[in-house]
Amino acid sequence: VQLQASGGGLVQPGGSLRLSCAASGGTFSAYDMGWFRQVPGKERVFVAAIRRSERGGTTYYADSVKGRFAISRDNAQNTVYLQMNSLKPEDTAVYHCAAGRDLITSSYGRAESYGNWGQGTLVTVSS
Image 1 (cartoon, one colour):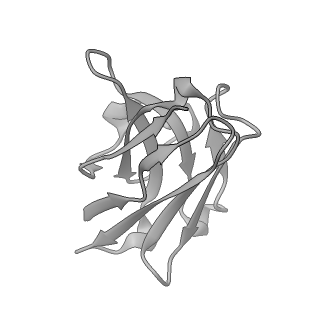
Image 2 (tube, rainbow, N blue to C red):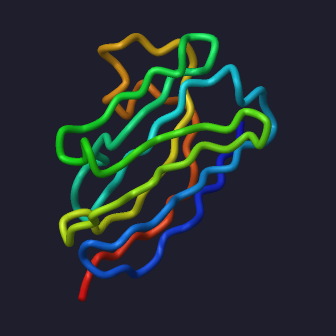
């Protein structure tokens, strides 16, 4: 499956953005989906994940974004979303979406668990 992330941009602290990740070339509904973020010189860090709907669509979040970010998916549109509210300067990063198959609960936060990645979209939180 190929992934295309979009929706990044410049936003002031306290603002909101919604990222989208459109999938093509595969059965989107069969994949567990995740969002990671990366700043220059550092490794990709887990942000959020959502199980495929057949597995209940369970969501997982990094502690740093709980209560502020929400991941969702629309299988009819082959798209996963990341709604980001109350943004902080430390949320500044390139955000990548990822797809994986049959992830176990303990693996959702590990980048190596996902076999497909999008190109990333830059989010800058600054006044």
